[in-house]
Image 1 (cartoon, rainbow, N blue to C red):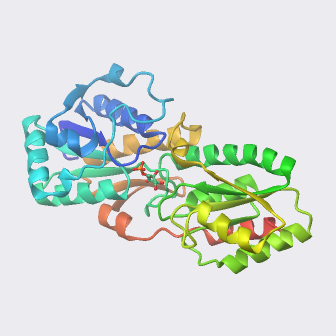
Image 2 (cartoon, protein in one colour; image 1 turned 135 degrees about the horizontal axis):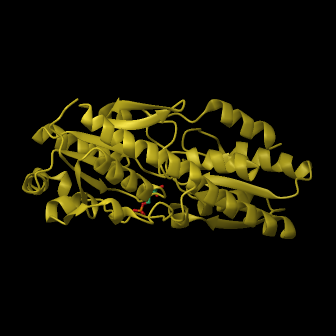
Length: 327
Ligand code: F6P
């Protein structure tokens, strides 16, 4: 056991995700359980640079488990990308006598954490908090399940109006360069097709699928488009399809940031709670420059650089199922 961890700083960084608060709560309470002082750093790395840091206590994190967003606030810090910015951040880190840092965020936040840890020899542990689910070393990231539920609920509602008017809808979901939300929403929402960055599906392929659906008298047609897919955004794809399929009345719906908000699902709360405790216990046991993950229901620690650089693949089996069920 590394006895020297007496003070831990925790921050949330990058795009917020439902369940980040549950992770903050778990980090704070696990610290207190193990007699470690814990400090909240507000607004991500910018908070370290500008010294917006305060000690947190058991009751500081009361009633946040069910809330979306992050009480620690979040930001994407340009200044932290510079050596000068990181030096300022380290000065704040030292001023508060911190021994280690817990970073809750996505790949950009972990890149920063990794550089900071290398430059100043500071123990750092990452907790994957992003709706995109695009980090290797964990089956799911915090916020992904809630975002999928939000997207699927929206799709259910869109389907009601799509079938009433016999319309074709293109629904764009988030995910940056990854299609995890799209695949999940397509299966859960019963989409006729989905277009994701990971698969090079052609416009012709999509049109063939839609024609087949029409010939089979499909009751409603919803196509899920992952943002960042190769054929363009949902509006661009709808335009191209409109030129080729004149018997469809087409509408587009971009779900956008509503996928980032809302009360986290039970699954996200439990995941975040497990990861928060595991981050603190990892630091106590001498882990550093690792990301906490849960794979096959086991907590594991993956080197941060591996979690960032390994491209997480979409599940081929889920992809196959989506295809079979969309006939
Ligand atoms: O990484 C989370 C995410 O919501 C992505 O899915 C999306 O591409 C991006 O952040 C949007 O970022 P912003 O909130 O800065 O517009």
